[in-house]
Image (cartoon, rainbow over all chains, first blue to last red; front, top):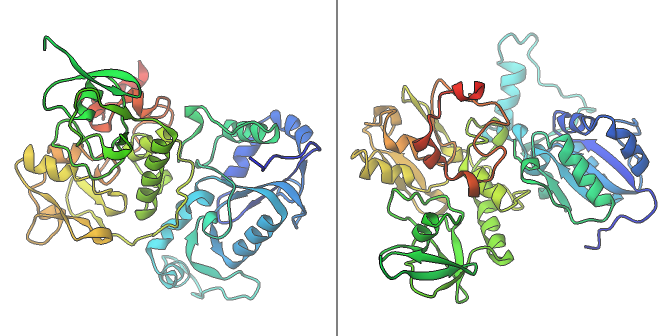
Amino acid sequence: MNNRVPNKKPKLATAALCGCFGCHMSLLDIDERIFNLVELVEFDRTPFTDIKSVGYCDIGLIEGGVANTENVEVLRDFRKHCKILVAVGACAVNGGIPAMRNQFDLQDCLDEVYIDGIGVANPLIPNDPEIPLLLDKVHPIHEVVKVDYSLPGCPPSADTLWTFLNELISGQQISFPYSLIHYD
Amino acid sequence: MSKSVTFKLDGKSISFQPGDTVMDAALRAGEYIPHLCHNPEFKPHGSCRVCIVALNGRHLSACTLPAAEDMDIDNSSDAIVEQRRKLLQMLFVEGNHICPACEKSGACQLQAVAYYTRMLSPHFTHFFPRRAIDASHPDIIFYFNRCILCGLCERASREVDGKDVFSISGRGINSRIVFNSATGKLGDSQLAITDKAVSVCPVGAILHKHQGYDKPIGERLYDTRPISVVGDVAANLATGQPHKSDERNE
């Protein structure tokens, strides 16, 4: 494995694409171990630091699937800047719940939400140039960039994330006990 | 039964009887060979290929391979596990398996076998096929998205229920389950909720209506122990009462 993290304190970045932030919440669920994590890594771009652009990092954790043009840009930027890119959670791994919209035409989804939906006032599909355009389908991140590791789960448990980060940072082989791997 | 004939499964001696397949003998000996379309109550199908094993460099499905004396079978080398994982990944991307939104999650054989082979991602490009749901039956719902075409409902309906409700139609990627009724709707078929065909589905394709998520996460069939220990979904339905949640309080 040539993906070893170098000896100095590795840099960690995280981002949420089309997800619910549940995977980030799960990372916070490591509770007091967050103090150990701060000792182990230096945080770069992540909602925890509120840094907006990603610098060169050792590890990038991506939550969520790819549903719009901004997701594509952020994901490609992460891939460019992170030595190791990790798909975290069901949405990043296989599209997850948002990918259920792939059963329908995008126009039908927009019509249902903004035009024909129950209780819609002033029916209008938002079209501000600042709003990223939606892709016709939601994709898992490995369909857009190369992914080094995948952690399934909705969300992966705090123990799964903690185990993974520890094994990765200490250069051990990544392995999980049975109960830490689930797809839901 | 006086003289025992055996073959080797990962170096272990497994005794078998005339007419046994490798799967039959392994199951009887308590050795797990991953499988999806196989259910010991029915004639082997050999279609899912998840039970693939290696014999003299050839890859064969254990559920259709007749046991023979002194065979030396590889059931768990890295190459075999990798091949099974690839087959499972293809099953996952070919349908729409959104585990967090499925009532069967935690007690699903597709999921459990994937856990067993340590599948962490579907790896391939998703098809995201658009498939309907048939909710026309008053008690049963059929999700085509989750069907893996194992053919167990077809076999059970024909061989046990004597109804021929299910059949696989079409070829290749266009294969799908069809229902035997004038309208093609499940609700107009002879299917009853007590039918064997309803209980043999290893995935979340055939589900009872009006119930779901009745076991909390952590207490479902495969939450804490792997399928190699717990056994198949259908086997567990046969031994325990699946829809009673009283045991939770014990």
